[in-house]
Amino acid sequence: MFNFIYNEKFRAVFFQALTFSLVAVGIFYLFTNTNENMNARDMKTGFDFLWITAGFDTDFHMIDYEAGDTYGRVYLVAILNTLLVAALGIVGTTIIGFFVGILRLSSNWLVAKVAAAYVEILRNTPLLLQIIYWYLLLLAFLPRPKQSFDFLYLDVFFLNNRGFYGPSPSFESGATLVLAGIAIAIVAVVVLFRHARKVQDSTGRIMPKYSWGLAIVVVVPAVAYFIAGQPIGWEVPILKGFNLRGGWRVPPAFITLLIALSVYHSSYMAESVRAGILSVSKGQTEAALSIGLNRGLALRLVIIPQAMRAIVPTMISHWMNVVKNSSLAVAIGYSEITALFMQTSLNQSGYAIEIVALTMLFYASVSLTISAVLNVYNKRVQLVER
Image (tube, rainbow, N blue to C red):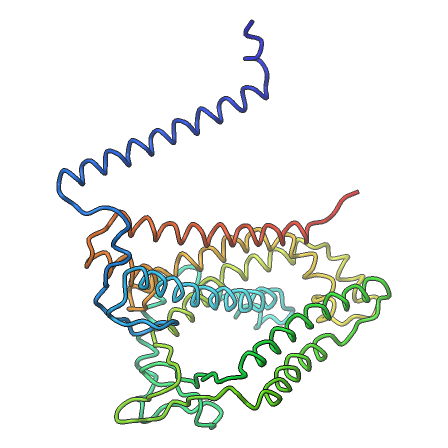
């Protein structure tokens, strides 16, 4: 009568359903109990606060924002600020990590030891300490606005102790054509790269895809720009009084956080790259060299593609850690989600549970997105067995 109890499929489904039900009941109990206790103490609950005026300003925002905007706008500003530094930090971590990881295996004794020292020192130093170190170093090293560093001596890009300044675009009628040209150029480059790979796989011929791609990216938008009558202008930063006015500005805290995240996490990434390269049989390197490839081409065309099978799984955690550790920016005042939303907004509004929940939702969403994207890529680079 009860033979279904011994069915493995039934037991697997039953125990999973039971576990899910218990967790759901526990969450429901915690939610209702917390809500009752907060109502008993006349504490405010709900997400209506997102439409309340925040009443404070921030020194850095990628979209229009002023003190009269709502907490919902603050949340959006904080998300964009966090995503910007996290995305650039991931790029910096990956590039530096690959570079240092390859240097760790250099045949030059001095280069290999310097790379090893880089990894060991940075991995064994707390990230928070490194952030504060870079922040104090930048403030001590960078000049005042009147003595700003002029990059390329073009009077366009400036760096001082108030931040990094550059020209901001001003769009006029016809700018849509230029943006369409940029989109077409990007699509054309993607198609070119895919075609070049197919040609290489079928014939072995290597197309000059990088030079052609660069030409497309430059020429197509430039042609659209002049056809549309140069509809995009540039507002250049100009020194007025004791500070630069106009253009866009990136605060020193952003630069500090970007450097610290890239340098710190690249030390972990370097070890993953080194381990991935070592996982490839030495016979692969010898075979590549025997057919006339130099060491650089052998590494790029033969070794790294195979090493990616071991590198990508660990890369997921490195990228996720960059995003989560960006929350340490609260120590130097950068307006990311922890400092701007979970600290300032929470202290002023008092909606602690809701704000913490929204912050957790953001980090969880970004982490799951990174994991999903890299897992898809990981499946593509894995060895296909017949």
